[in-house]
Image (cartoon, rainbow, N blue to C red; front, top):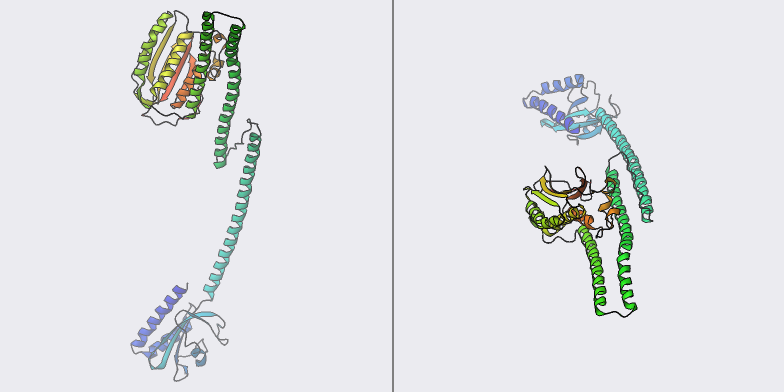
Length: 434
């Protein structure tokens, strides 16, 4: 506003100076008199003579004496003064522009700025009020948000304290608002679900180890104890020792399988990974197991369609496929058939082993993937209940999954699903088998 007022004063000064430079002093005096009389912009004009000590123009509506004007002789463009008390606009602030002319003349142009100052004060009042309002709103909003966040954090602390005390079934509340806290609660609940599953699995594994390993250890101890009760010949000692070694080998195999599953689930072994042709691997393993199936009067057929290469550990993949083949041949009765196929979908490579044996009931297909779990009809067959658990661990280790389903008209179909390397997938390694 000050710059605009000064620009108007400078423009008026230039106009009047042009009249003065043209040598028409009477015209300049007349122009000043006319402007004083008819100006509607809050401006006033004076032409004073320091030598004569009086106004060089008619006084008009501005009855100011020369001495009053001379008190403003030091003012320049942009200076702010107040008119004297005998003025019609007394005590009103003005901005003035003073120009020294020849012959001791001084031209003064003033612009009243009371309206501008009122507007400025009003603007400052509005800005101050808005600032106070915004500050109050910010303080209120910050306090509300802080209390809300602290309340939710206190809830999380309370629930986590209960979880730390041993209640693994507790979960963080998830509201309908999908904000950062909601996403964090969902992730933490997923983590707690996995921890609870692992704890249950560990408890179950402990119980199963105590149940399944106690019998062979007790049997081996009893054999050795009975053998030592009386004198026997070397053949009986050797036979007892051979039986004890067989029992020890089975225990060692069980612990090796447990160790392999643990290493796979922790992902600590990433050696010997390379591009593997699954079709060629299936073809080689099926050809190897065909004589085993023929010994049991079974038909082992395979259809290894080309499905490309995947980056994997060939030894572990071979172990998973052979475990599934071995189970299919073991539980399929004589005269049965086992079919091994490979195929690919839009996103996955699938290895399928199906048989027409007794199969697994639907309600037990999830349970048999746990460690040391054996169905009642399997108790009479050798094994430790770790085969399918190891296969599932190998599948997850490679970003895949193991799916157990039915085979028509009856039997079991075990499928290994691996992501195709040429398709970007968001693999959830914690996803349970369907």
